[in-house]
Length: 505
Image (spheres, rainbow, N blue to C red):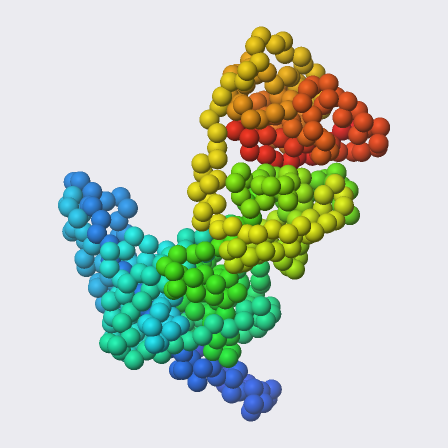
């Protein structure tokens, strides 16, 4: 949406630019060479060859209108100055929205971008959020022609969707994916898309950063660029200077909705596999290890005898998963997967997902301070997600009858026996074993780590504990060894595991 203040700012900027050019022209002979006066090298030839493959994606969705004629979610028509060049565009965009909130159904339209990657099959790539919940999808080409599109498949985890148009109805122009791994910070890139529904628009910038995690999904590894990306650019391609797609433009950071030079693209390295699977199967088929993980902090690394904090700490094993037979155990740290280094926790889900289902891979782990390699055959993530959803057990009472709760106090926690009374009080499942935390002192080291009553201590420094006395003895032994932190493995009431370190000073 373009507001009146924004248009005024645009006019002021235009005036300032004109003034600057006039001043520059007046003094140019004294310091500007003939070569520099020509400006940077043009990208017109590159853009001309790519525009035909970049498309506008328009969708429509039937939604139920609000009762009484007022829709609090409706987008109001912007107030534009008389004679504004955007007036016709906004009149067209809003004409079907006003006066339709009468309690009945209405058509809601949205616009985005996409690009053709297979001219013979009519395959088009865009963002999932561009076509989500659409009743109809139409692909509009740069020459003004339009084709109806069918949805082939979507992947919400990477926000990618694959569409198909009939290639017999139009001769298509396609582009190909390039190698995003070769791109460096500072390399020139070109974005082509459909910002604000204005039509094919070309912008140029550089790669500002790589490997960005913006917390949008489990496989975040975005390319950041300052090439202008605005609303409507979603799903459009980010090209290198050879005309290859090295990213799919998908998100921006902006308080106003317009470009402030911070845009994000899904790298081709991630997109290619997803697009190929969606085009072939209509769904993704990702590798699955069957583990729950958490970051390796400096304290955890020290407790595990690791020189540096790296890798992914295994916090739990999914029953029935690929490593349920003991190849990998809670407390292990994965530092390499199938020859690829796992530097941070988020690296592991991505490299596993990119691996073929059924592949046997070598996984390098650190177990109790010793590095070793285990062989694992991967399962399928989509099957594993269903298995994980059904794994959560309902709380059940134990079989102990009338046992007294023996308590101990350590590290700001009160520790008790995990008997039938404790299970009933905290709703702890029968398969969970260890010593239960019955209370946590305010402002204690345990409270700082988020430990709460009802959690169960199953291991301390990778040694099993089951009674308050064993907890006390294990902590005392660590202090005698000169340890500053104790590594605890905690189980929730349903058995989900996590690791925490607690200061012992």
